[in-house]
Image (cartoon, rainbow, N blue to C red; front, side, top):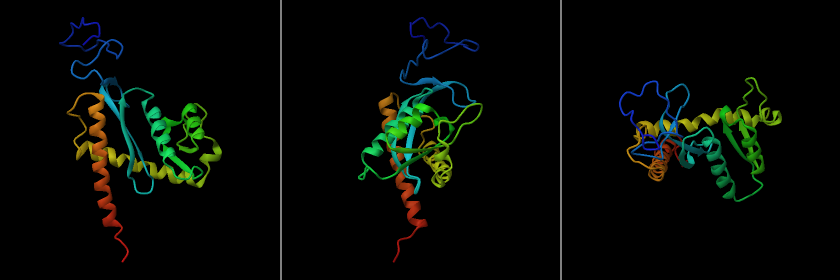
Length: 201
């Protein structure tokens, strides 16, 4: 519906422009119109996770409103939390991420938190914000390979966790459901890891 209450196009709305500035959902105002990839704009939330690159376990999860900056902003929050709980402030912390995180403000934020950004370089018509010294390191190549583990959690909660289309409304409730689902995924993941790597006798 229109935010000014004058919504008179409840029928066929093809060809009519809608945006978060002019319209909002009647049933869930927290959900925002967002286009992901080549899909059509739909009412969405954005789920974010941070996982360890050794076992693929989710160490942090959160849901935010959907917009073009949410992924990087959420990543900074979760990385800062991870950095704070590190017992040794001098221990090296790295983060692997795709090209969408190759932005100067994100790379700089990582460096200020003493987190080495192993972010995929985006050189399509632009200069990457990731220093070449980092991109040429051995750890960078490992992080780029391991970062794909994070997709397994999302795949699990969309199918087994039934979160492809959430049944609750409101950012707080969706966030709670997302975090709980990721915790359940971790339990399943740990069981699988235990079967692959039996305890030494």
